[in-house]
Length: 95
Picture 1 (cartoon, rainbow, N blue to C red):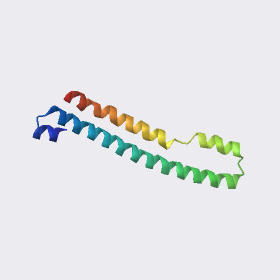
Picture 2 (cartoon, helix red, strand yellow):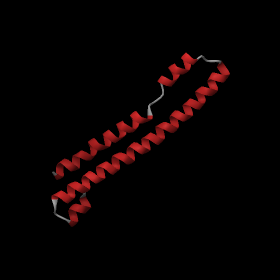
Picture 3 (cartoon, rainbow, N blue to C red):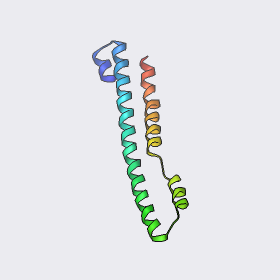
Picture 4 (cartoon, one colour):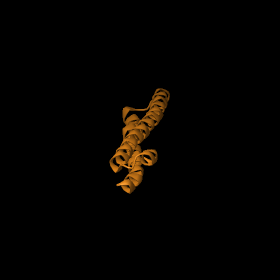
């Protein structure tokens, strides 16, 4: 937004660039968080499956352990939301 504002004094162009940055940043943060938490989830599931075979855990115990794992989609949504909230500050200043 600052670079566009230095070149063009048009408010609409500045706001458009701010919204584009907001969307791109929120998507980038959400995808990064999704990949990170999903890989963590995958590792934890593999460890649980090993634990089930060695300790003869029941299906109910396995389901209880699965409930404790983080949800990758929820983490991605929270990351995108927090980025949007932070990116609104310069956008509100431009408006």
